[in-house]
Image: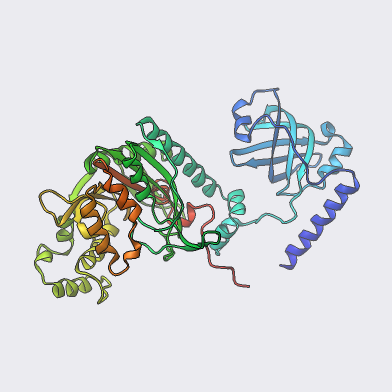
Length: 484
């Protein structure tokens, strides 16, 4: 800390020296020839270019210097020569440090090693960095520092820049894919009087003017379905959802979902759409359908195969494969005892279907890496899905599992207002105030048969980039306050 304070004091002195020279240490603007990436694309021997960026490396050769300038699009080497720049400008140059932003105008040339470089003819200070950049970023043992100071992570960690560039591509290509298939992007409320569309604990807030308790949405489903009632046949939303629940490697209280609904489709058509979408995104983001996952040291852990067609398997069959063919023939107590033998944590208040679901998550979901559509789930798990015609204890749904986690649920939507009300009442129990009566009223006006799905953007980004934590794919994840 003392060393850092000394460096800050030195930089303060350089800021004062720049002021004394009549040079503004914090510039107001600089017209460029484009981003660094664009300048590299336009690069041609002898061409004059203007570029701006942060100094991330400095190689002092005496009367000449090589700098690396960087922005989010890439790196550009620039060559500073005292003879070309002049004594006065070199005195200003001497007051620069790693981390400073500069704008330069220079001519393109290629070094003997083949590196595209700009020979500096003029230089402008744009922003003086008061604090030094981390010197040995990859050696940090406190991983949370990367999350707390993401701006430093992005400056110094190429892997992080790559992940977030891929996330940006993923979102852009998702919208293009959906729009190309006739889906219209819409927006639905984040503040809701009744949080619905999922079984989760919401965040509560208060609207003072109306004297009304409101909730941050846990899902947009019930509003998107209102649009089906209103005559929109294909809608989607890239939405932020909020759930007041635990934080883990796969969970953040604020997360991003793609949710879409397609009138007159069913869960099988939706599964085909989701499969096509994810394969398209894999090609755009990961370069193909074979996605490598590596550990922190870069060693290959496994390769996910996203090649089509993806496996379909019934929920009941997968449970029996994992827990034994007699699982559903056991008594309720027998299932609980057997679940404990498998190391599944069971609580006395759990319903019987919840015991089976916990076992499924531990023995099936966590051990499934290549894509599997799990179909025909118990109706209690998905109260908004249409019941199966052959077995009314099941619903026409899929849960897409890849890489040991659920990536996308989808189903044939329940459009019977009588059955829907009963299902929601069963889910709410004694808390009938949780029923969204406005949604049920909309349903009574008639909703066409439809299929829909939700796709976790954060988890999909983890899948396609090989990131091991959801915090690695969210720019600013929620963290505990830093202890003093």
